[in-house]
Length: 358
Ligand code: PMP
Image (cartoon, rainbow, N blue to C red; front, side, top):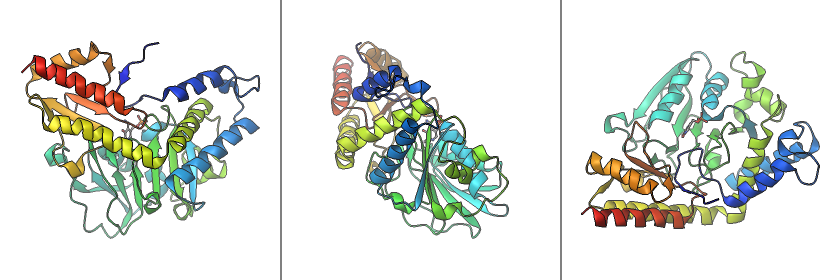
């Protein structure tokens, strides 16, 4: 099969070695005579998959046993529900920094359960920059929620300033992509379909201090405490999805966090450097300190170029660079599994296009 050069925002490209292992395991899991989708969720094989995955998350995030690691159903959006259900008591406020669609949607879900308040927003700028970090939180803040990387608009928080309330982050589109002090977070979560495997699975990592009390009556499936008590196997687990996450975690460890972070910087710089000097393409985020290394959003000087370049890339085996309908034009997602050579190929494709259309 000729693989496409894939810049999709998610489900995203997976490393070929991971796909090969997944394909082999799908037919037979490690000499057991059982296919991966047939494995028993309470059997020893899946217990080992879970234990190794949890240990790798702790190792790669450099956090200890004071954090619980869960692999849950429902992707990112179910975490938008579970976080306020579990952590937003009556009479308290969930504070949100609104940096785009996903941050805003997390706030909207929280509003079903209690007081959800936007305390900083970059909506005015069309989310083309990050807002100033809030100096003060409402006195009754239960937690502060941020979205570390804004998949649609292409901005990203580096390590963030100190806060007085527990910090909770949606890291769906940049987990394990850059150096980050994960121990600063009371909780972080990520939909798996970018840097951690396939859709449906959500990684949720929660400091034990957050789990002391149930803030309301919650059905067990949606209760972090109940999920912790059952080690993520409260119901029939998503075995194929979680195994794919394990393969991605192993791949991440083998490559090394420092090497991954450096390559992500190199990939993004290659593309931003080209955009900053282009006569046709325009980077959406101007402030270099706010630019995402994961999702590089750009437009063109005319809509004609936007249509034509999309066609041009499609003819050159490139897929997934159409921008989100809210942000427009183009978005190249450069998740961990995208090789530097693919970004070089995209830049070369842009150069050829520019030469022909000067
Ligand atoms: N948060 C972020 C930052 C995302 O990028 C996405 C999906 N692109 C989501 C949440 C939602 O994830 P899901 O589709 O798994 O609900």
